[in-house]
Image (cartoon, rainbow, N blue to C red; front, top):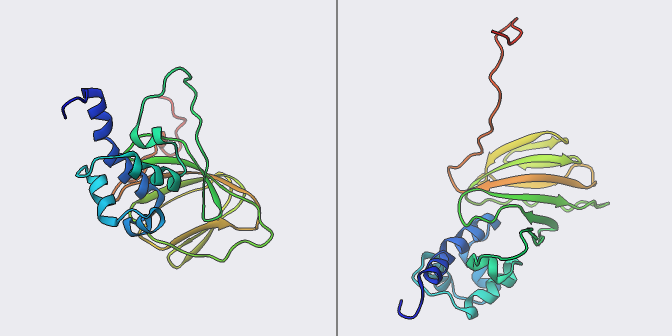
Length: 204
């Protein structure tokens, strides 16, 4: 690209994959995004694939929809203050605090389900990917296909998000949890210590 340095080219080249990863992490389809932003589905598709150049006119409505600054969409490097200031995202009556910033792969969130005297009616949804969650506080109700599960603090679950699923409070109280969301075929791998032999004390 004449007149554009290599660093700028690298930043612009990362916009498409970053936008695609962000949309999939939110469980939003191109059609849904087009309806909210007013940008055509074909334009959004070409923007994500790198066939359409990112412009301020296209990025502004996306930044507003996702609730993130423009710097996050283009991956512009931050200077000076090394602290991270995640911006809460409000969706489906819940609060999502992004804990990771990479454009692809697994995304980490802290999810907060506010306390409500009358919890909303379950509305199971599906989308591509896999999800791992760990309950920090409260009691989580997880609807997964035909199963209705209650997870207490310290319990975890992992599932394919192509199954209809819904998260809510089991008793109307506050629930806080950590969530790892990955693309289709990706699962969380947790390192655990090797099991001790029966009757052994673990010493050689």
